[in-house]
Length: 407
Ligand SMILES: Cc1ncc(COP(=O)(O)O)c(C=O)c1O
Image 1 (cartoon, rainbow, N blue to C red):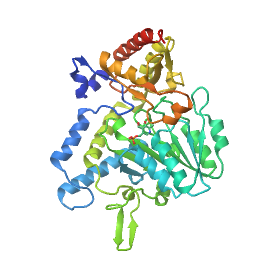
Image 2: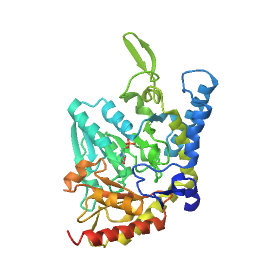
Image 3: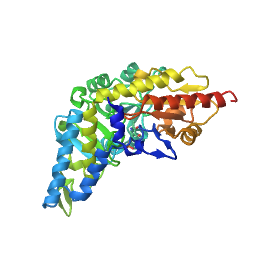
Image 4: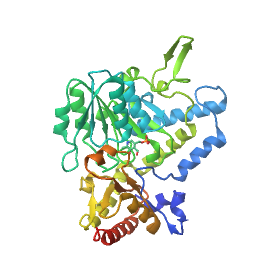
């Protein structure tokens, strides 16, 4: 992987910010965008700023064609059988809400989740409990921070209608054994939703080989523009899933007293869409495909190994489990004794120009259950370098030496 060449595509990495080069380690929140993506977004506004699927003039036809092209690209990227299994949404959260609140769940049904769900799954599940009286079962992680497949199987019953799980954790970077989870869930007749927001940017996902029923992804975590989610729904079950929003475009006909929904994907794409974002998403997927997902994953793990090696035995630095960097992709989460996570992130920004995330990362229950107030998180991506990791690990060592002694 030619990191130097990749870096030349990202404007922000090629100018000093506050008089220093910027080290961007907040990729799990959102990645930077290469010029190929920002140019594609501008092309929409400059050349065909119209609306898909409605007007019949040439600008509108161009938008429709471009969006169809991107839909096909997303289907290929995820190995879906048909582009019609892909809907464009606002983000991962919308896809998760659509499944959890649109599956006609009823009292007596059960939903199984992990104990480290992002709120984009956790909160709609709590809402389903409130609205429909479904039972929420949470599978506790194993002591080493991995997914406890035995506990998962114990939680499964014929009443489980849905397993909704975070494929790759945004807190620890851990990826659960997806194929086994789907196989076990299906053997009980349950459907499976994977929140793949953190997985899709750097691991090849093959929805057909996995047999997963639903999967949700956000473009902004994989070099795409903000405000575009990609939602996969297996064709055979899409008619049973109801949208969470109703209005124009998602319907085939309406009368004063009735409406008829269109099939997927249109039923999930109500109202005017984020066309510039969809066009930009196409450019992002082309960009990532040209690098290769396996290469991206290997690059992240190699940087994470370097971080882990430098920091795992440093007094006062507490890494979140699992400790093995091979299990954590590009995410390195930790605390420093004597400092809050926000202090760590602010000091890193002010002293070294390192941008990272701190807090509970929208996974409050995970931290409450472990008696933690949060963590600092460094997350790397395609343009990050071994030298940047060196600056980061030196800075963490310095901070730990200074603050953890006095604690
Ligand atoms: C694991 C995971 N799931 C879901 C989300 C929500 O993504 P979005 O805000 O794009 O809906 C995130 C965002 O950080 C995430 O990391």
